[in-house]
Amino acid sequence: MWRNSLITPLKCITINLLQSESLLVQPSRNTFILKRRHAPRLHKKNSKPHFMRNKFFIYDLVENTDVKPQKPLEVILTSHVEGVGKPGQVLAFKPHFAYNRLLLPKHAVYASPENLEKYKDIIENSDTLESEHSSPFVQRTVNILTKHVYGVVMNKDHPWVIEPWHVQVALRKGGIECPVEAITLPEEPIKGPDMNLQNKEFLVTVTINNKEKVEVKCRIHHWSTDPKGRLPYVFEHWKLPAERLFENVTQ
Image (cartoon, rainbow, N blue to C red):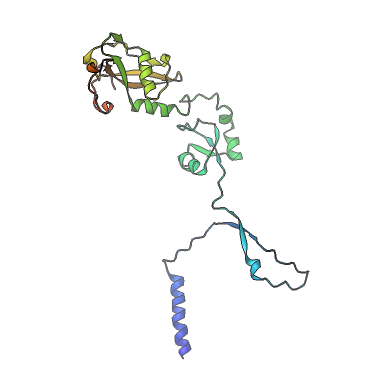
């Protein structure tokens, strides 16, 4: 009788464990490649195997696939991607970058034999194919130029007229190398010194790779070689609102 009373609770516990909804069963895909430290002795055919001693169950780790670096993933670009490339290019990236930045947004496809055959025309004509952008990094350059304000420093004591090389120097101070031929000033000349022009803002047009055109904000600042004649320093003046030099120009 006492045996039946003991078996019944055990059955209930077993049934409850099997029917529990909170039990999470998740498979593990970890792979470890091991090697025996001591090789067991061989036995003759149709004979009894030798006794396996404890030392035969000691293993050395050969490879852990979890920490093994993944190979670069090759993809075919189907559209222009900023900082990456243009349609038709076959490139290799880290799997995480390729999945999240290219494959999921449908900017690229796997470089499988089927896709290489499917996009063969685009791949062969990728160099001659007319693209919306002149280079993969042109949009990044446009974003930098439109986001910053560049100060054009002019002499306070001697007459001057702003020329493209003045803007070139201002861009160089901001970390941008630009040829003079790529800078287009407003049609109306800007002459000085004129304190009414101090901190006034005007736009210049910068041409990138003879294709993209971007308007860049510039501000005039007067400077004197005489310390007594210098204007007070304004901290982070580029963050302050500025009046436009030419009202008919939209910014």
